[in-house]
Image (tube, rainbow, N blue to C red; front, side, top):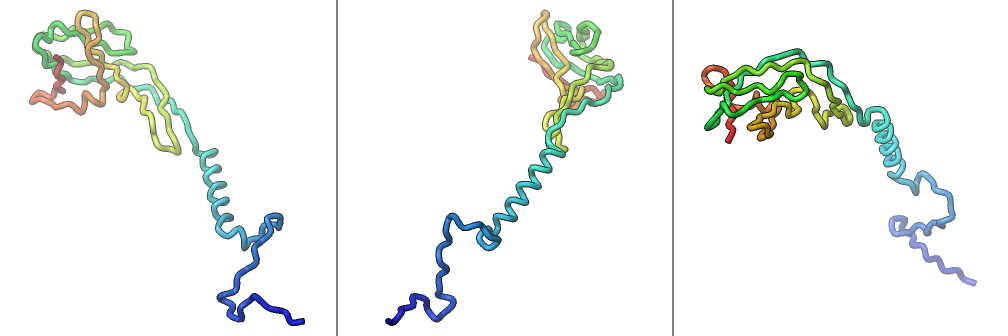
Length: 161
């Protein structure tokens, strides 16, 4: 009896027989999966070692900022520093004043993989409160105050309607 071979003599055209799903996996059938598993393990290691952290900053040193309030009636306004023990300070008629920032309570900043994702430092929190007749009309952080325009006298200009 003659046997018929379905395999071509050309090795490039030969197909490999399908592997049984019950056959154990070999390195050849895994291919690049071995490398992907190593990358996932490395990522899990980085997350467990670096991950997310809350950091409590040091206390701030007392500092001052020059402020010029531009409003139709600046004498009707007062400024309160949140966290400080001082009362609201009325704004003078010309609108120019020097704000004194005492040592303020600290809050934790959040870091993810060593990169700050939530800055809760004294300068970043909106601790400057502009009040009119006992009502809060605007909140501002020290960083946004420092980013505001500066007049010829070195005062940061803040416009209040």
